[in-house]
Image 1: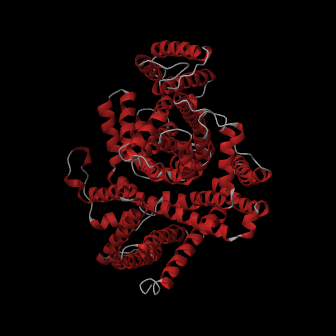
Image 2: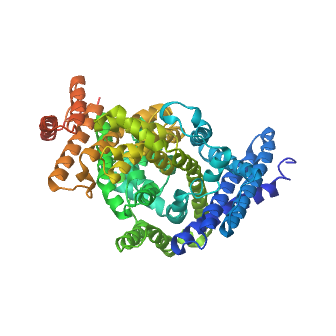
Image 3: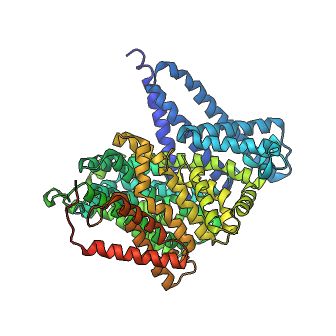
Length: 632
């Protein structure tokens, strides 16, 4: 009592500061989306400073519940906040000096910049762990000492002053264009997702998903796929989506008779898919539009059909797994009943989404669409949800959660600014592209395989937006030099950057699902990859069959042909992995189906024709034979 009582006012003060900062950040995101910023430097640097302070204070607040011997770390927290304040204040001072004339950097300025970078890396570690920090630290080391490296990695060499000037004291590094895009376009969508959850639309959406899929054998697993697809597109984090929806869906999937590892794998795979599901695509669509100059709507159209095929494959895989295990549909009497209140509350997400689409189709910006969606959702929440009217603080909590999530993504993208600055200084991305061309020769397939492996490795352990930015910086030039259209190249990179979240050994989404499912995270990652296998194939199909994008080299013949082959591939993969079609399959039959799943997509006319004919025959046989009980 004597130990905690004196600290209670301090704890309350820290909690209040954290909550107020998060709400302010959320409101900044909404304001900038609608009205823009009167000062570009203040928008970028000031918003980052608030986000980094929030990341620091959040961890500091947790120390009240930690063991007493760790409380000395508050000294570190205070030092970080002081270092952040000094480095940001100096940035503004130097910026003001440069606006009026020349400025010659002093040694003190350089060390203050180094201090600012150190604070950023520590804030990143607190928000996301070590993977992203290690990448940024290695990048800085490469900028300073890369002149001593051999082969393509060697560059002319840069001093600490040069690196600091580019990475910290300019708009080419930490405070570069990606950070501006996050502030002006992405924050409002993160807040929008939090508000939908806070006003009560989230649970209703999940209930609709259960009601719509309850008659399928997979039941809750199918509901998890549907709900995660909707929530995931508005979330910038696969693992965040896993935790948000998985806490409800994973236990229900297990209770239906699926193994715990499989339940976690389904949730992880479904949550990953939300990151390439239009219209928001986990905020990647906005960054991609800014990087490529391709209109946002064009990107959404191009990503739509591949995402639909991805989720269709998840539905088929879960259905066949349920058949294999003898899991029956949920009895009709146990299905959730949609009440009048549920239908009314559904307007809270239907109307804002309809408004967003209407604004986008009218040619207005994505930021403006998000700006109008937020107040409409809030007004509908107060009108339709009695609980929100009785407890308006629910809205403040939603803003707090949105601000907290916004702070994390801002810190991550600021860290990626380090990589962007160094890549631009050294030209490593272009040299890496040249090496891939040399190693792959004239083989586009080999180049794509190298790109896939590189994307999976570089994206491991990172949120979607940073993963995309890092991978496209390093790998993008290589695939574009092979003649792949820019939009297709970027979608190729996005897929593998996202799927790295379910790929062992890092598999950050699997680790997020593990404590909920109470299963081994590596096993969850393996099952997630098995369920989502078609996701690893779709990018190749997109490169070789651009008609799938609907906007690049589209022909009806090519479009219908690739849709047929992808559908057959999904069925072959799903039946091959589960060992179930109309009857149980022998081992050789499963192997043959898996081989056919790949063969129908091989870009060779004779191979794809023969494989498609064989797959069509097997599929027709499966659907014409009378279904028998195949459960053990």
